[in-house]
Amino acid sequence: MGPLEEAASLSLKTSQGLAQDNFESSGDKVHSIIEKRMGKRVGTVVCSHGPVLPQLVSAAAEVGHGGGGAHWYDLANLATGSFSVIHFSLDTASPQIVAVETHEAPAGKN
Image (tube, rainbow, N blue to C red):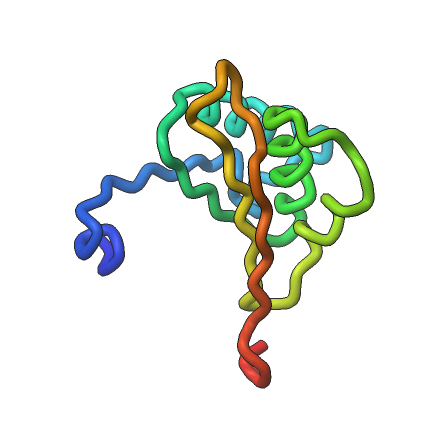
């Protein structure tokens, strides 16, 4: 058990389909994982990096009815240490994106 997992009393689950080492250019595996997680309608943190991020963001946008567009590209192409958060509503019949935020790495830390 890791420090965050223990401090927050969380149970972490890993999905090899989101790992950079298992990258598949089709994105089908990533989309399936995101669709399944969002379909459960519970708070979820999904983390990955490298070539998987564009697929992860694209899948989240599609599942969350966020449409397409260049603004999603920026969420997936971040400097080291930066991250984006895509918030989904739990009060709608299907997953809906309600907010997006991006946090840059502190200056001099990337």
